[in-house]
Length: 165
Image (cartoon, rainbow, N blue to C red; front, side, top):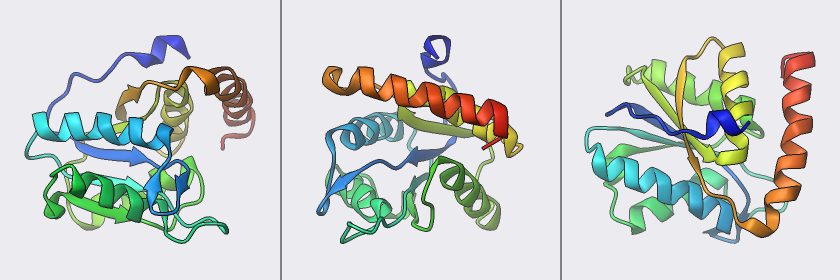
């Protein structure tokens, strides 16, 4: 997991930001960290398109993608560069449904996925299982949730390796 933390150095890729929990119409701290990394990339790569991926949980008033798009718009990213993928309920669906959007809109198939550092390995494994070749950028994780996040992720990676999802 540690070896996958290094960031992509590619430029002008299509960006997929993986969803995370929201609070009302605001991103959680962890989601903000992902979105801030996406913002940095999008500012440096002004021709990149961005897919914000995340659906609607039972206890949400909005899909994660709506909150993610709103956050990036408030930071100044042009609305024409942000596409919502709002049907997914997990990382595999985030990637699968986002790739379908990339194909439908004929976007650049060089893809950089942005997620939390601890989540990058599983995202890469799931993308490979879907036939996607991705680069990644990891965001920092709030130290207080790091032990829980890493432990949970180890189980998630094990499931992907054993079951393929």
